[in-house]
Image 1 (tube, rainbow, N blue to C red):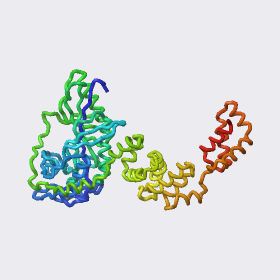
Image 2 (tube, rainbow, N blue to C red):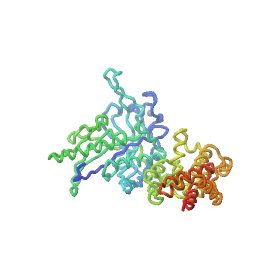
Image 3 (cartoon, rainbow, N blue to C red):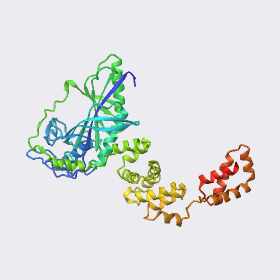
Image 4 (spheres, rainbow, N blue to C red):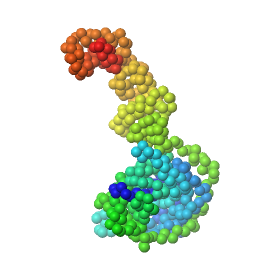
Length: 478
Ligand SMILES: [Zn+2]
C-alpha cells in the first residue's frame, strides 16, 4: 500500500439472533430445514396479517448494547424500509430508522499489542429477508426460499474509526466472541449468521477524509480483509492517476477477488422509511434494562486486555483462552487462587487440555478438569515433587477420572528423587563408570555433560530430578 495515504473504514455488521422463534411470528428460527417449511402468512408477507414483536429479540439486542457500552433507548419505534427484491415478499423490511434501540457505544480491541477504541454508532433490530436459489436444475429460473424471512437480526454500525484491514478483522473477531459469550448468536459464518457491509475511503495524510464506497456481500472475516485491501488499492490507483472516487455501492466477489460496481449515487436507493403502523412503540422498563445489564459477564475483550497487560501473557495465547468462555472460566478460577503464574496454568490449558478436547470432541464440562485439581497438579510440578513428564501422566488420569493427584503419584511411582544425598550417590556411581566422558568433558567436549546426566536419569529409572542432577554433576566435575 502507498504510505502517503491513510485508510478509513466503517463496518455494518449483521448478526442473526438465536431466538427460538422468528421476530414477528411463531415460526421456528432454524437453519438448514426443507425449503419453505418454516413459514406462515405473517413471514410470507400476506396482506392482512399482523406482526407481533418477539420480546426476546429486544432483550438480546439490549444485551449487545450493554456489552458495547451503548446508551439504551428505552422508548423507540420500528420503521418500514421499502425496496423491491424477489426475496422480500412484503416489498419492505421492518427495521429501525432514526431511533435505534442502542446507540453511542464503543468497544476496546487489541491490535498487535496496542489497545484501540472503536466507536459504535448504533445497534438496531430488523428482520432478515429470504434467499434466492440459483441452479442449473431450475431451467434458467431462480427459486426463492422464505425460511429466512423474519429471522431476527441486529445491525451493529461502527464509527469510521478503523484504520486497516487487520484492525477490521480484529474488530469483527471481537464482536463474534462477544456474541458467543452472550450466547445470543450461533456465529456460524458458513451459514451466514454474521455478515458485513464495509465502508472504505482513503485520503492523503493531513487532508480531509476521502469519498467512501460501500461494499456489500462480505461473508467471512478473511473476505473482509481481501475486500478492504482490494478497495484501498483500487481507490489509491484511481487518485494517483488523477481520477476521483465516486460515492457508490460495490459488490465483493470473493472468488474473483474483485469488487464490481452495483449502483452509483445517482441511482442510490431511496428507501422511503416510515414508521411501521402495525407495531406498537417499543417501551422497555428501566428495571428490565438494569436486569439485562446484570447478566453481562466479563467479556472476552476485557479478559484479553487483562491477560496481556496484567498477567504478561503473549497475545496469541491470551486470545485463545479469552475467546473460549469455558477455558477462560477455568483459567480465571485458577488465577483467582493467587498461587502460581499465568504461564504455569496456560501451558496445561493450551497444551494437554486443548489437545484432549480436540481429539475427543468433548467440551471442557465433559471432563473432570477443574481449578482445584489443575492447581494441585501445578503445585506438584513447581515444588519438584514430579517432573513435567510425570505431570503429563497425572493429567491424563485426572482429565478422565475424579482421582486424587497424590494418590496417582503414589500409585504410578512418579515422585522424583530430590534427596541430595541419594542423587549424589547416583552421580558418583555414574562418573566412576564413565571415565572417558569425564575426561572428554574436561577437555572441552561440553556435550559429554548431557550424556552423563542422561546416564544418571537412566540409573534412577527416570525418577531423579533432572535439574538437580545436572547441578550435582557440574559441581562434581569442577
Ligand atoms: Zn412465520
